[in-house]
Image (tube, rainbow, N blue to C red; front, side, top):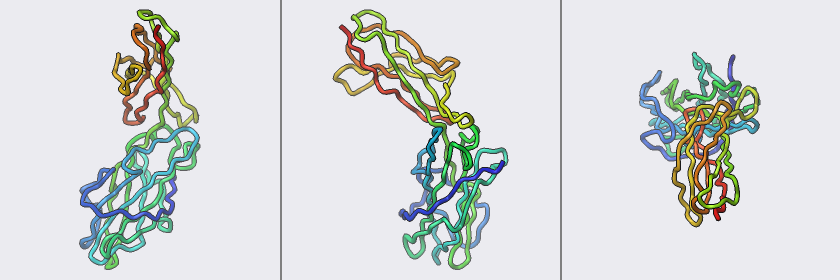
Length: 261
């Protein structure tokens, strides 16, 4: 199935640099002529594109290129999803804007749109993977450069993490039970579902401190739930913290305060 993602106008310029920032720029050129170069590629500010179950997410893309004669406006930028053949998802020359940085350098920008409700790019959980950005740029003297994978970027399923420590209050030396749940967006049901078999840290921050320390590491069960016990020693906050995976971002629960008497 052909995936679709919309590229919209942006009017941002950024300075030329020699290496990519926030994306991996491919070294091999798939095609080109003359001395035109791609100098910088940035997708979503260098961060993974994290998509939940309801809201559309917009990821800014910018490609900076240089040529002695300057860069034309007939650029295209395309994103490719993680299908076996990396099917092209969408592009439109009319909605890519190129702004001059200098007489020889321009930055071309657009916006990728990820709609978890379907119809643009996100049409199943397999979309959580490494994507690639393809681009073709032309110079005023008809030089051109094409890279099928000018940059790689990740699309991830949004995550949630909860915590509850009880009883509250509790006597010193007694047992505290800390429960919680790690869940992530399911783009097929449009709901959050438990993330199973994942290592999660139980952390504690003493009252008056700003630093959490790890107490122990446990794994989520078959429904994404967490449960463990600790001995009450002093007032403070318990939270669970998840380091993230390739398809799911890191997340930490808001600390739950326990009054130890």
